[in-house]
Length: 144
Image 1 (cartoon, rainbow, N blue to C red):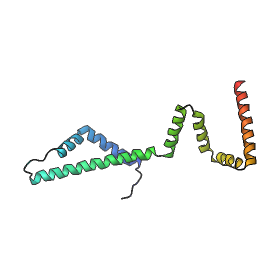
Image 2: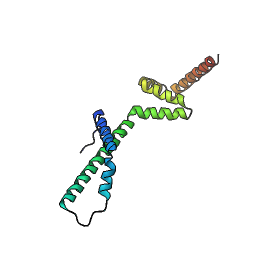
Image 3: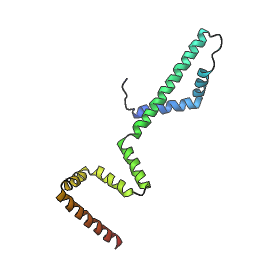
Image 4: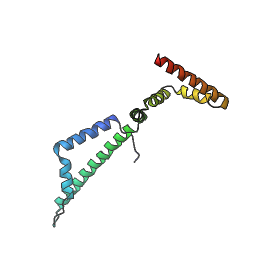
């Protein structure tokens, strides 16, 4: 069976199932009933009940795995990964670097232009001088 990225309907279904199980306390009863020691004499009705409880437990565990997959799929979205990196950079005092990454993501041509400017040694020197002059102008304007 191939893994499919869960949809919003999937998430809503899993959450509603979890709420139903928590509301009725079924999860504890299922676990307790399945994990109890088996009696000495097992009847056919007991076997059917035990099989049904095991099926219900397996169904609950499948839904728990599906919910975890939904959560993991949401956490691995590029937007959430970039937001996490930006937040960590901001916490480390490097918020300007996070802003720069966000700008490069918003304007991909900017990265292309910068890469072409520093591709040769001659252009690299010119780009460095331009960056130094721009930073000095920025510092002078910020202080006045």
